[in-house]
Length: 414
Image 1 (cartoon, rainbow, N blue to C red):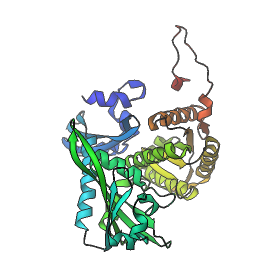
Image 2: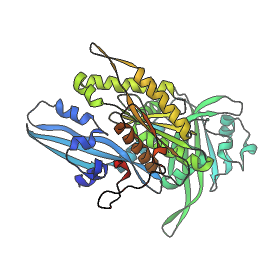
Image 3: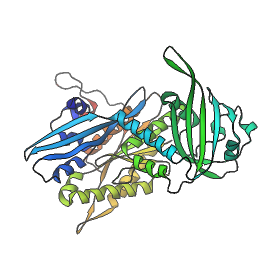
Image 4: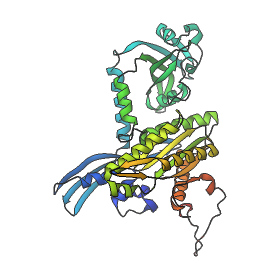
């Protein structure tokens, strides 16, 4: 069972070393082993590893592995792997719900209740909703919720249609972000959308409408803000973490299908990162990762997403950016990283990075497909000398090549 989990993520589908397979997603496993001094015992138990997004029909769910390492003696270890993806999703939803109800009476100025019909049009409004949004109750009836409570432009918050789709699937959805009243005033709003069902037909729940609860919450040091940060950021670099990145990427993909805008991805991999760890220790490697993160985030737009997806590999999500602009962004980051001095021990070190660019340009494409293309470009950049940017266009019109036996050579091998 463990091998079934490892084979799909191993290079070439071959597993020869557990740590080599998982290094890209959880390079800290080697550190855990190195720092374990007893002659035997549990080195880690159910250590979670976010591997990649696996989904059907374009719906992305995180693949999360739980890894337990037990040291038998100085020469032998046992590793146990299990898929805990669904458990992680449920835990996240439960924590969101707990935070919502636990802070129901804390830092709340007021809350509003709005009723939607099955098509998402407003059919009922309480007085608090009119006060919160700045619109009269009569003006809101019959209109779309996003006409009165839209997310800010460039915000990661879901639209009303997206929230209703999730609520229809899961029963409810909780979201929060900056909103704007009719007079232009901004406020931090938590929004709960719950699906209402009247009956069941052929074992299928029939949605009759939705109930929306809006809360004007003081952002400050609220528990929900801290929890959201914990669940969405990488603990070492402060970048967006792998699981949250795929959530945001899928959200942007949904918007692409409605707006017809391109969505660009840039994969970044630090060159010769193992040499940094070997020469300067893991502290030196951590400093390199943090420095690259801080530099890249200062050079990107506010609505661009910068995430660490494993080891020394990062990804940038660029909404409404075509391939040419994505290449220009990647080149700007490449030059900046190469010019950045790193002070490690008594040395000043310069590092470089390789880049692969790809663009999702229509709703028929999947995140997995476009990221696979970007990964192939990154592979080409690495094997083309490193410290370079390779765009997806290098694969477009590449003729199929065959070996001496007439077997087509996979693109990743070219």
